[in-house]
Length: 363
Image 1 (tube, one colour):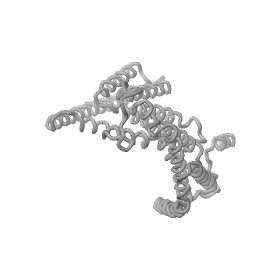
Image 2 (cartoon, rainbow, N blue to C red):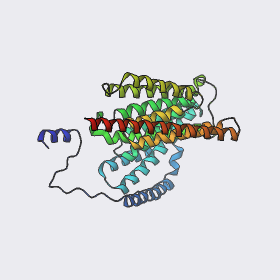
Image 3 (cartoon, helix red, strand yellow):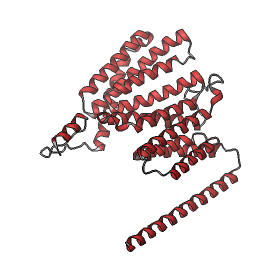
Image 4 (tube, rainbow, N blue to C red):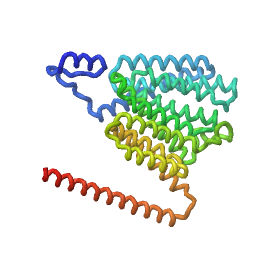
C-alpha cells in the first residue's frame, strides 16, 4: 500500500493494520453478553440505592432535572473513557435513569402550566433524545436514543396533528436519506449505522402498533383534529416519495447501465404499488426498506423490510372483512401466481444461459 493512500485512509478514520502488528483478539459474544448483563444488574442495584435516598427529589422538578442531568453527564464522561462492555452498559443504565428524571421534571412543569394533554412534553423529549443520539460516544446509546426519538416524534405528531401515519412516512424519508449517504462521511460510518438501526427499530415499533390497532398513549387515541383528514394516505404517499427518491439515486448512479425500458417498467411497478397501498396501508413502507437494503447491499436492512412487509400483509389479511374460505382461496391463488412467476423466470434464465453458451462455442 502506498504511503499517500495509507495517509488518506487514516485521515478518513479507517484503521490500517500494520503487517508487523498482531491483530487484536475479539471478545467472544457470550462473554460480552455476560458483561452486559452484569453491567445492567450492577446499575439496577446502584440506582435502587440512589433512588431510596433521593426519592424526596421527585417532589421538586428542579432537583429532579439537576439530578437527571448529572446522571446523563456522568454517563457521557464514563462512555468517553471506557472500552469495557460492563462499564458501557452501566453508563447506559445510568443515562436512562437520568433521562427518566428529566422527563419527569418536564412533565411536571409542562403539565402544571399548559395542561396534561399537550404535546410540548413529546417535542421536548424529541429534542433531548436527538441531542443524545448525536453526542453520546456509544453506538448502543445512539441506537437507543434514535429509537426513543422516533417514539417521541410519533407521539408528538399524534397529539399535535392527529397524524400517526404521517410520522411513519417522515421517519421513512429520514432513514432513506441517512442510509443512502452512509459512506459520505467515512469517519462516521458506524455512528450513522447506529442511527439508522435506531430509526428502523422506531419505524418497526410504530408500524406494529398501528397494524394491531393500538396506541402508544396507554389507552388514549388521537381525536379528529389537525391533519386527520390526510390519514391514512399521508404515510403511503410519503413512502412512495421515499421510493422515488431511492430510484432517482440509483438511476443517477447507474445511468449508463439502465435502459429506458427498465425505467418505464420500474415506474410502472411503483404505480402498481401505489394502487395496492390504497387498500393495504403500509405496504409501500416495507417495499421501500427492502429496496433500500438491496440498493446498499445491507442484509440487515433487507430483513427489517421483510418484517415490515409481513406485518402490513398480515394486518391487511387479518382486518379483511371477508370469510375465512375467501381468504384461503385468495392465498391459494396468490401462491399459484408466485409459483408461475418463478417458473417463467427460471425458464428465461435457462434459455438465456443456453444462448450464451452456444454463442461462446461458436466464437
